[in-house]
Length: 391
Image 1 (spheres, rainbow, N blue to C red):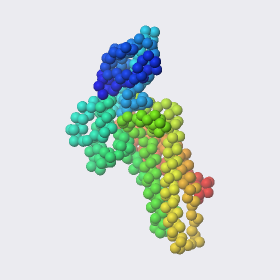
Image 2 (cartoon, one colour; image 1 turned 90 degrees about the vertical axis):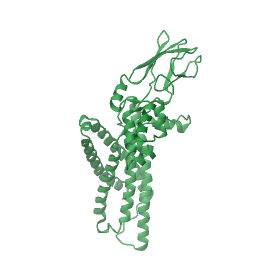
Image 3 (cartoon, one colour; image 1 turned 180 degrees about the vertical axis):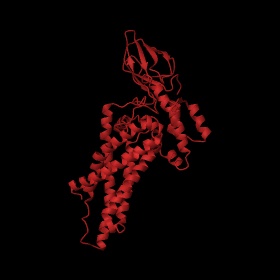
Image 4 (cartoon, rainbow, N blue to C red; image 1 turned 45 degrees about the vertical axis):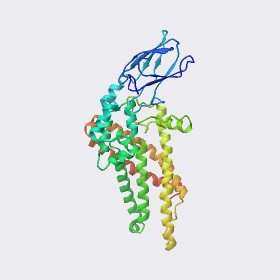
C-alpha cells in the first residue's frame, strides 16, 4: 500500500459533511480537510496534522486492523485532540514505545528487505507473513526466528504447515520445551502413581494405563498451548456478524492473564480478567471432551474384561458423564488458575536480567515450578474425585 507511513491510515468521520472513509497516502487535499504533514509513525508520538474547515471528531484506525490491535508488533492508536483553530493532532505509538520495540525485536523491515532475506535463505514465506510485510513490515528478530525455525530439519515442516505452532514459537522459542516438560513430568508422575495403585496387576491392566497416558498427552498439549503467547500476524476478521465480533473480541484478549505488554500491544485490566474466564471455559471443554474419551475407553476395556472373567475384587466401573464433568470442572477451575500463575511466574523469571543472560536458569525454573504444580494437582484431583463420589 502506497503512503508515507508504513501502513495507511483510514479516517472515518462522524461529521456528516465529511466523507465516510478517506485513505491517506501522503499529503492529500480534500474539500473538507488537508493533511499537511506525515512522518514515519514507528517510534514517534505524532505523525502529522489535519487542518479541518469543519470542526469534527475523527476516529483513527489502522486500515489493516479495525480494532486498533497490534499486527506483528506495530499499531496506530486512536489519538484525536481538537482545538479552537480546527487543527487535530494525529498520534501514533506509545511515547517512545517504538524505540523499546526496536530494541527488543530489531528494526522494522520493509517488504523488499523481507523478500531479500527469504530469498537468501531459499525460503518461501507463508501468505499471511507476506501480506504483513507488504502492509506494515516485519520486525527483523521475528523474521530471522521464522527463517531459522522453518529451516530446521526436524521442525521445519511443522513450522511451514501449522500457523498455530509457528506463531507460538515466534513469540516464545521455548514453547516446545514447556510442552515437552509438561508431558514428561505429568507422564512420569502418573506412571509412578499407576504402578503403585495397580501393583502386580499393572501389566494385566496396561491398556487402561496406555489410554490414560494418551489422553494425558493431549490434555497437556492443550493446556500449555492455550496459555502460550503468540505472534499476531495478518488481518483480523472484518465480519460484522456475531462470529466476527466474537473473533475480534477474542483476538483482543491476552493469551494469559499475565501476558507481557509490548509496545503497540496493550491489555486492560478487564481484558485480563476476561481472559481468565474465557480460558477457564476452554479448559472446561477440553477436560470434558478428554474425560469422555479417556474414561469411555477405560470403561469399555473394564467391561470387556469382566464379561470374560469376573472377580470379587473388581472395583465398580466409574460413571462416564460424571467423571467427564469432574474433569471439565477441575481443568476449568483448578488447572486454569494454577497454570495462569505458573505462566506468570515463568514470564517474571524469563524477563529478569538473570533469565535473559542465563537462559538455562529460566528453563530450570520451568521444570521446577511445573513439577511442583503437577504433584499438587495430582493430590488435589484425588480429593475432588472423592468429594464428588467418582472414586
